[in-house]
Image 1 (cartoon, rainbow, N blue to C red):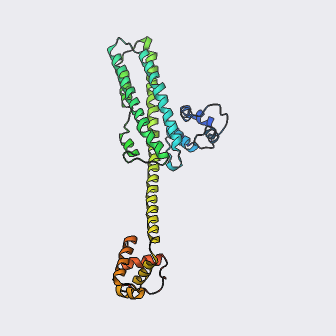
Image 2: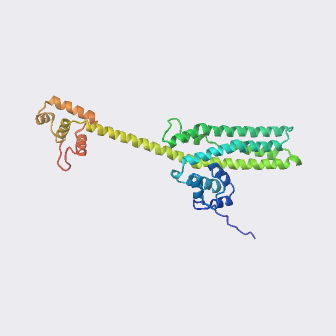
Image 3: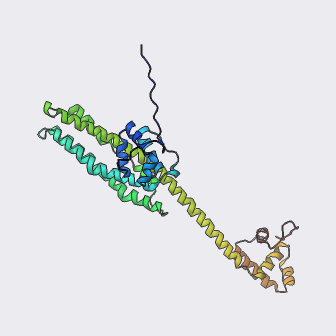
Length: 326
């Protein structure tokens, strides 16, 4: 008889949890601590206390930990810190390029028989994989990271956005999968090298998992965050343009002379050009000139439009019967 044991639900860690409990539940958190610049020796302090001491944004730290450990996605990119996330990703690059890639290569080289042609080819496959990873990460450091740094200070780009990055952010771990298959299926090993090769294979599996988590953070945390920043800046630019347009309109309104205001009121009251001329003791030609200047300054040409302008600027009172000629 089978006994069904329910799977333990993944816990979503919170700021009030003790940092030591996160590590006790999953030691992979140690790598995240290092990438965020958080040092060990924090005793029984909470996640919030440890992050505050290390000057790391707590929400961003928890977003990365909960995604990489438990697959929980933070649905509020607005609450995240681009600076903290950038620091984390840059440190991850340094860790992977400067330590992980050469370390695994050394393990693999020590476990292979260099006189065996297949061994040489497998090492070549790894070198090609390492070169591709370096190329991808350096692209991010030269193109993506500077772009994000400009976004943080409110600068935008006309020829690049996060969608460009998301489209070309293909899986970079295909070579690792191929490498594992080649080692398992085709690489002969002796009793002397078997343990070393198994250890190297374990490291390759760990690298594959680490890289998948890294890409997950970029795709599910970084991309939504940067997209939100781009949209916010776009809205800010639109609001600024609207505000600038409103200021121009105000300046144009201020440039309307007292005589032109009198002409506007007369137009709103339904007077013809001749009636306006008689009313203001000016020539009909002068009235026409005033009307052209008013239309140019206000970009309003119809009597109805001038009526709206006159009401909005207090030149006529709302509620009185207003007639105008077409």
